[in-house]
Length: 259
Image 1 (cartoon, one colour):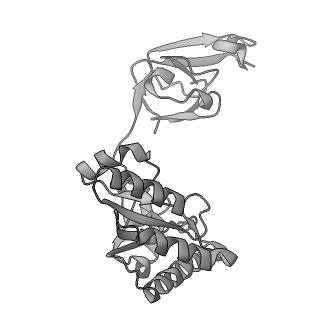
Image 2 (cartoon, rainbow, N blue to C red):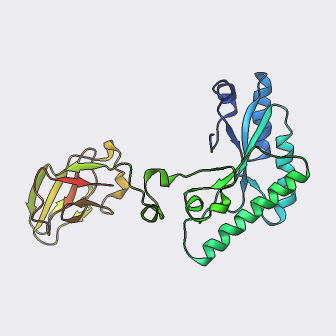
Image 3 (spheres, rainbow, N blue to C red):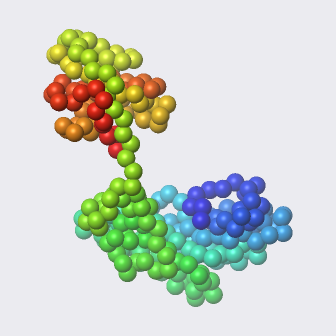
């Protein structure tokens, strides 16, 4: 199931490889239908309903309810689309406060109203789903026909510790060089960081060419066996500098964890 957009000219490949496509608006349904008809095929789709995430999906909140239901029913009636499923997405199901719980339940109730209204028109679905990681962990009554755990699959997220999940991966580097710099020494490109005292700087052989986002320069820290070490100066293409001033027991060759 592709949760986002696919260009209509790729519909023949979707059909060929039995890939299911999300439909988030009537206009998209009509485009996919036309593309499927052109190759004399039928595209399997899931309907996306926007109950409050305000990202993708048929609008159904407030005054949009009747029009949204009508648009969904019309989309499902297109002869070259097979509407196998329907779903929505929660925005705060992993939050603990009362307002977030109320909003999540409002989203679920609205989704159920849409399902009932469609059923009254004779439009039903084999698969109904809405539970992301937060709802899967906190609202079992919202599981319906399938669930979509996302961040929980990586052993991360708000409920990971409570559920006994462990991270599936870590990104590590090592300290390749350590230098002691005097006060008022500029570190790395752009001179964006200047030392205020004698500063012990470690160089890591990892940078933005390895996927370490350059925008995290001076805004993140790596973990050593002796605590966090802040990034100092701009992250380079394949090197990053970190502050080891208060970590005398970190030495060249020691591993550091980025996440």
